[in-house]
Image (spheres, rainbow, N blue to C red):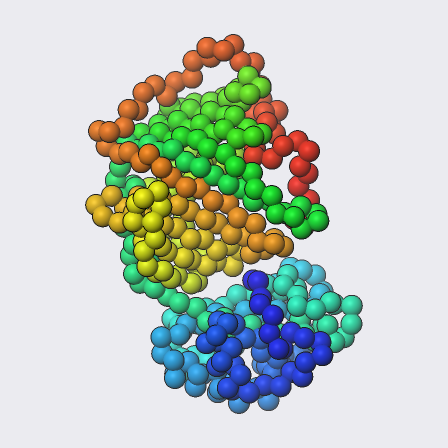
Amino acid sequence: MASSPSWSQSMDAPRQYSKESMQQALQTRDHYDVYGLRFDSGKSTLRHGGETLLDDIATTLKNFPDWGLRIVGHTDASGSPESNRDLSLQRATAIKAALVDRGIEASRLSEAGVGEDSPIAGNETSGGKALNRRVELVRVTDSPEAKKLLKAMSDYMAAQTALSFAYDANLQVITNSDQKLGLASSGTVTLGRPDKVHTTRSGGFVDTEALFDGKTLTLLGKDVNKYTQVETPGTVDHLIDELKDKFGLPLPAADLLMTNAYDALMEGVYDSKDLGSGVINGTECDSLAFRKDDVDFQIWVAQGAQPYPCRLVISSKQVKGGPEYSVQIREWKSGSDVKLGDFTFNNTTGAEKLDINDLKGKLGDLPENFVVGEAK
């Protein structure tokens, strides 16, 4: 989880705790790093000495009954990443249990453990390691209205037997020199439930088309005039899962197309906000924001009888620089306004057939001179 700088993260600043500083940090920055809760090495049992601090946290939550709290455990880099992640979660769970014992409703508390993944200092010195061994308190919002509006969008999308739209997408990448670069593309989606879909996507480095007729998926690289076919009979939901999990080729705005879009989008969400109204392509929308451990996403949903998604922005929290993927929808149509057409592939250009693994590299947004690194 990304952390904003605070007084407790400076190697030179005194790590003095006060109840007032904690409340102010949670009110103004939604975030506070706690160092007064101690554990035995390699264990998740709280040592004696932190009772006053736990009492203060519980009292603060009682004084602000609309607050929820995310308890995130962090470790230094001693030990394996896997064991550190497990240990940090166990410690966060122990703190949650201690707050529940002090009268805080468990529904207001959530816990996470990120181990050594989010250091705020170097792990080369004992002082740096001490700073990294911390508990992060994050004030969270649980907006029933935001969830209600997102669920209404999901239900509306699932009820459409036919829909189509055009879209503009932007994929932001971070180079090794920390430069942010945006790769733009546009395309179309036509969906006939339960088992028909046709998509196109065109950008500076990609020009593709995908057709699914309920039995066979065809992927065509129009710029290279090559195609591949995969037998994957089933629904569009099944196809989306197969493409993502088996082949690493997600469809544009795939989560929005699924009949259980709400469940897919809300998995792992711990913070939800209704930000009020916004306007996308001249359409007044409800602006909703959600947070997960790995990503934040914001979605704009059209107001009125057709609550379709107008814009979706997904921001990474686990990659330096926080790259984003956004898709903006236009020319929305549903029901009888949609011309479904033919979902069967007709090889009118004499394209060469390849194995899917041979074609995958020619279907992505990144040009060949972009090499994906391990850390970025």
